[in-house]
Image: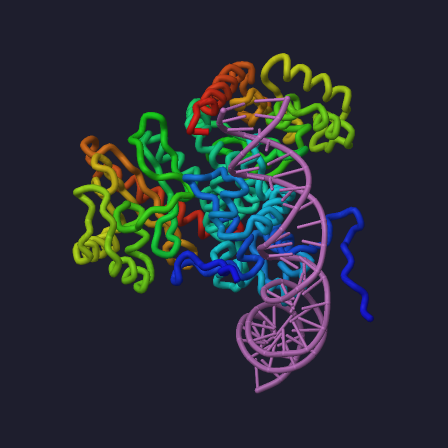
Length: 262
Length: 262
DNA sequence: AATTGTTTTTCCGCCCAACGGAAATCGGGT
DNA sequence: ACCCGATTTCCGTTGGGCGGAAAAACAATT
C-alpha cells in the first residue's frame, strides 16, 4: 500500500483534516507576495490534491469569493472583501478613525498609520502616505513584529502580561543597527511608554525614519489600537508631533465610546 | 416522518449541499446591519442545523476567521480581513488610488468616492469623508444600485451591453423625486456619459447632493473603477469640479498601467 | 437561592458527499 | 503541427460530516 500524506512538519500547521479547514487553507494560500495563483499553485501551497483543489476553487469562484483573471489565474474576490469589510477591528475601526487620521495627514503630510495587535504581531489597518512622505516598509493588511515599530511598542506596552512575556522570551528581530534587541532594555522602554502615554521608535525599522505613536483605548478601557506618524529621521524634532498624535488617539478613543457607532 | 429542511425560496439561493457552501453561508450570515451574531442567529440565517453551525463556527473562530466578543457574540475576524486585503479590486485598487483621492479631498474637502461594478450593482471601495462634508448614504464595502449614483452611471455606461440591458430591463429604484426611472431617459444619459467622459447625478440619491464621476480604465482599456466627488447641491457649480475629477481618474488609470504595481 | 427557559456544548452511529487516482482534454509555447 | 504541463471530467471507495438527543452552561425571573 502507498504511504499516506504526511504533514510537512510535525509541529507545523496541522494536516487539513476537515472540509472547513481545507477551504481556509485555500484562502491562506494567497499572500502579499503572491496574490495571484494558478490552480496548481493553490493545490501545492495548501497541501491539497489537485482534484480537491479544483472542486473547492471552482465553487469559491462560482460565488465570487475568488475571481479568475483573464490569464486563468485566481485572485481573492470582491465578495470576500465585502464580508471582510464588516470586521470590527478592520474596516469598521478604520472608518471611525479616518477623519482623525485625515487631519493628521493634512497637518503634517507625513505617513499616518493605524494598527492593532494580533497575537504577538502588529497588523496595519490603515496607512495614509502621500507621494512626498518617507517610504515605509508597511502595507495595509500587513504584519510586523511588535518590538521595533512605534505602534508595536504602544500595543505591546498595554498588552496582557503573558503576551509581553512571550514576545520578550523570543529573540527580538533586528532591522537596523539601532534596533533594540535586548529584552531588558525593551522592558524599560515599555515601562516608559506606559508612563508617558506615547512611544518613539528612532531608526529601529528604517535607518532614517522616526515614528511617534500613541494608544487608542476601547470602551472597556483596554487598548484597542495605536496611531503613529512616521517622519524623516534627521529632519523635524518629533517633540512637536507628540501632542498632535496623542490628540488624534484620544479623539478616536472617544469615538469608540459612542454607542451604535461601535 | 418529519419533514426535511426546505429552501426558503425555490428560485432563491440553493440549499447548502456542499461543505464548502456551508462555510460560505456562515460568512454570508454577517451583514452591515448585523455584523455581530450569536451562534443561534448564525444557524438561523445560514439555514444550517445548530450542531453543524457549532462545529463550523468553532473551527472558524479557532483559526481567527471569526472572533468572539466578550458578550459571546461572533464577528468577522482579522484573519479574514487580512486575506481579503489581497483582493485586487479591493484594497489593492484602493492603495493605488489613495494618493489621488487624497489630493481630491485636500483640494475640495468634500466626499471622495471610489467604486467598482459587481454584476449589476456598485460596490464602494473607498470613501473619504471629512467631518464637514455632506452626509452621504454610502459605506465602504457597501452596495448600491447603479442607475442613480454618479459612479454607477459611469460604470454602467462602459459596462458590457448585456449588463446594461439587464439593468435597463429591471424596474429602476427611486430615491428622490429627481431619480431617473425611465429606461429611455437613462439610455440617453449613458450615451452622454460615454460621449463626455464624465457623469453628473443631481439629487438622484439624496435631495441636496450632486455627484460628479469619471471612469478609471484598466491596462486592457476596459473600465476598472470610477471616482466621484459628492458636493452640496445648492452650493458650488459642479462645472469647475469636472476637470479635477477627470484628472484624478486619469492619474489612477495611469497607475494601473505600471506593471508590478498592478 | 431556587426555578425555568434558552443557548451552547458534548456525544455518537449512520450514511452520503467529499476524496483522489486515472485518464481525457485543453492551452500556450516553440 | 507538435509537445508538455495545466486543467477538467469521470467514478468507485470511504472517512468525515451530519444532526438527533441529552447534558451542561448561562440568563432571566420570582
